[in-house]
Length: 159
Image (cartoon, rainbow, N blue to C red):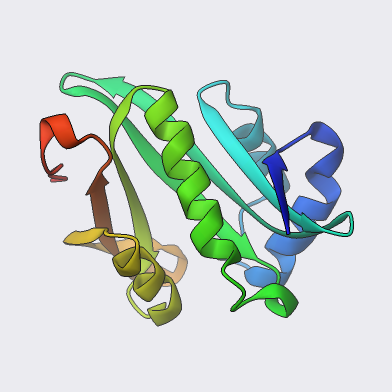
């Protein structure tokens, strides 16, 4: 598996994975996905094998009164490529990009019924910090997870 940063020519393949991973109304629109990958305060990582996109992940960051924090917008792996460690490596790359941008913490939302994603995040050291009702379409709730990515500042608290 080869990992690299997103290039604009990747968009069609990236969005094809989005369409495989999420049904409407849970799928990002093309316009929103284009906005996410074009954000100058973000990193989009691509996993590919034999020039075929196997997965991708997007993180962005912002400066807040307590410093810079990062947010994982999405992590998606083509169904045929799952259970091969791709999501773990994409998570590591997201964390490295956020750290390089000066972020001291990283957080995300995850559907409360997405046990595979929850296991991934917990395996990577993320802690559940709360629950947000009606976060996703059709009023589905989300758990909020966070992780400190800077030993100097200790644990990060969302909420």
